[in-house]
Length: 492
Ligand SMILES: [Zn+2]
Image (cartoon, rainbow, N blue to C red; front, side, top):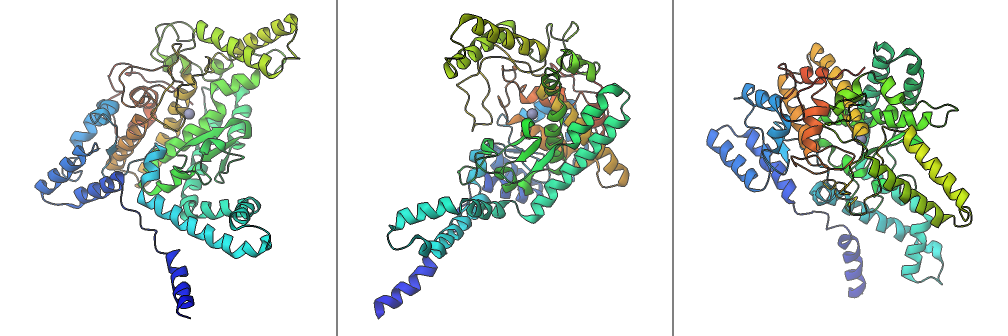
């Protein structure tokens, strides 16, 4: 009797008690930043800032007292301002910091507690269905069997912990607004040729938001029970969906709204980026390899910043190299022969294959062509392509620029309505620059061979070369004058 009582008391409590993760270095930094901004005495503010800096973070100084000075410094060179702290982990005045590394999000107490609650719910669910296995199954076999049968239910259970109705509504609202602004701007554009507008509009209209990550449909998210969770946004062109991975949702409350909007618009832009347009055109009877350039007159050359008709001679952004293209052809050819030895057994067939590959590369000059780099770590957002041959960076730069065009026009609309002020502009710029500075090469000064330019170039050139964005953020003195920047390009 006493044994039974002990058992009954212990069972429910032992499976419930443990969801209270200790705060990580990032959790502590967030709360330290909150403390700094709620402090009133200058010495308390200075002490909190010092504590943050010792931990590898930085933060904009007390905004109430000194709005003008930091705004001037940020506008003059946002990349340098952020990278004065070499990790790029820089809080804005609302203590917002978008985390781009999966491992950082995986350490947040808010993430760990939700995962733990989900684990308990899953255990209870399995327990409830155990009778379905029959008496012949062992406990472990039964559990594995139920996990397979109820995989979709279990996945949904996890999703509901992170894709809460409030977060979903927020992300959807930004996506819809970016999409509508895109449609309005393309329709009214005096730069985009009229004959190209129906294609651009149908591609933007046809791109949907996808908030249902799972291992089959969105393997790039690498979540669905994996720890740490995927922290990406991406546009799956082949399926016309913009996917928001679980890790993004887990830290959504600390993400700046303008920065989120710019990321959404960046992803939408990929649906009509010059590479995608050329890859679609390639299927036509007489494809036009200059379609990317013709659709956005002057823009690609302006962003690349070099000489010649493509802007590729002595350019700021990388273009494909002849050797990189040749390497890619050899790599694809070898792979095709290995996968289909019978199909390519004869040399005329191999010649045809080589010819087709060369045709494809020629028809898509604005796509990144080079052999794949096995050394990059896909789960490390700061990692970058290290192959000796550079690849084209215009697709990503175009998406940054168009993201800024959309986010800038929306911010200007909000400013006219009185819902976006100078401080919001500075916070948006700091948050955006800080998220870029954590990606693909971090705060490096020299460009890498990755298809994304380094963070400093992305913010100082791709984004700040958009006048609408710059001015909406409160930067009225022209583009940053740093190396590689100092230009204004026209988009839509
Ligand atoms: Zn992109």
